[in-house]
Each structure stands twice: as structure tokens, then as C-alpha cells.
Image 1 (cartoon, rainbow, N blue to C red):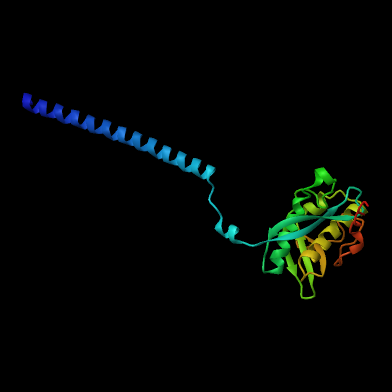
Image 2: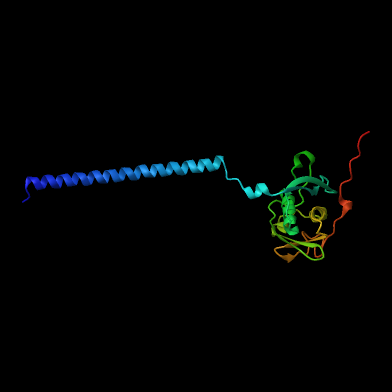
Length: 210
């Protein structure tokens, strides 16, 4: 049988063990709360002060003319956009195409019509030695296009005139879908050949009132 002294010693050890366990639990809880608070403030700080892309800030920008259709879909009308300047002609063309696919920024005021259906994906572009740009889009171009000879013409020449005007190395434009030659966008105009810019499609300058 254990003596009173032994029992007191064992009780003391049990109390110390329980006390240590409580302290460990409390420390774990406090540590968890501190960690959650740190994560909360980090997320809040990043939301209020997002990291600055220094590379993007240092990139030069240029003004570009992006062509859309007028409300009657008879002429091409320009809108000025500020885009990143690229040294590589293919990359510069990509910036121009993305601006075109974003659509008109003055549609509510001018009635300008977007020439590409919403959601069209620009995949890539290849520049041939003869100055032909082979522009590759996703299948949404043909799937979502409204069709009609006028709408197809506006799509083709808004792309062609926009690229040739903003990228001097491009002389003609051929449209591809998923990397393959496109017979026609929606059955009205053949797209098996490259297109050259058509200045006759530019909207006539408005006469100034005397």
C-alpha cells in the first residue's frame, strides 16, 4: 500500500500534468486565433492595396485605331484605344486584336456595332514573310456569329483594316478557326484567301457646318 506521502506526490504530479495540458490547449487556441487574425489582415491588406505589377507600369503604351461597324453596318468607324507597345509585330497584333474583341467603348453614344460576337477567343497569330497575318480564333467565331453578308464583311474588314493600319508589317489577313482554314464564317463570303484592307469601307468624313 502507498503511503500518504506517495499519494500526495502522485496527486501533485496529476495536478501538474492537468495544468500543463490546460496550458498547452490554451496556447494552441491562442496560436490559432493569432494565425487567423494574421491571415485576415493579410487578405484585407491585399484587397485594399493589391500588389503593383511593376513590369506593366514600365511598359510603353501607344494609341491605336480600332475599327467597328456604324449603326447601319455600311461603314467602318474608328475608335481610339491605348494599348501596350510591343517590339514584336505578332505580339503587337495580338494587343490590337484583343482591343477589337473587347468591343466598342462608345456604343451607347454612337450606336457603333461590334463586329465580333461576344466570347470569341483569340488563340494566336502567325506572320508570314509576305506580310500575311494568319489569325487563329476559337470555334465561337462561326458558332455565335449572327451571319449575313453584311455582318460577315464587317467582321472580316474590321479585323483586316485594324491590323494593317496599326501594324505596318501586316499587308493582308487570313482568318483561321482552331488552326484550320475557314471556308466561310457563316456561308456568305469565302474566307479561303487572305484579305487586304479596303479603304472604301471607311466612313466618310463629316462635313463641318459653316
